[in-house]
Amino acid sequence: MAIRTIREEGDEILKKVSRPVEEIDEKLQILIDDMIETMHKFNGVGLAAVQVGVLKRVVVIHIDYEKEEPLILINPKIMKQKGEQVVEEGCLSFPNKFAKVVRPQEVTIEALDRNGNTIKVTGKELLAQAISHEIDHLNGEVFMDKILPGTLEYVTPEK
Image (cartoon, rainbow, N blue to C red; front, side):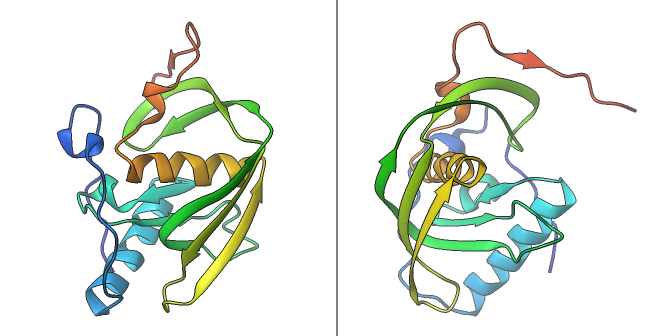
């Protein structure tokens, strides 16, 4: 496993649409492991492959590092969305920037797991937010495109 470089604001790849995964092979398994390790190193909740420079429809999400395994989503498709929530959001590709965005309260998706099995996941609140945020990345959209006017904050990192 390896820590990958996170592509940051201004990198054109973040605006590109990711391609569907055609084959779940050893190379993809390495990418998934590297993405999980990279997300953990930077205390992220989710990471899309495009954020590490790979234009594949792969997402990893890990809400509670202590209690659960990471959620791996390959070729995720949103099947249903319900409700709205205004949430504060940040992104590993936009370090130290936070803003309010509108996300669905609940989202149901279908995807493949890392073994190629079809899974259906329904996420509420934070999980719905994370799923929506990461699928946006796969579609070349970033949270900065969706912020509510006047809510952008820059937090000075501690040294």
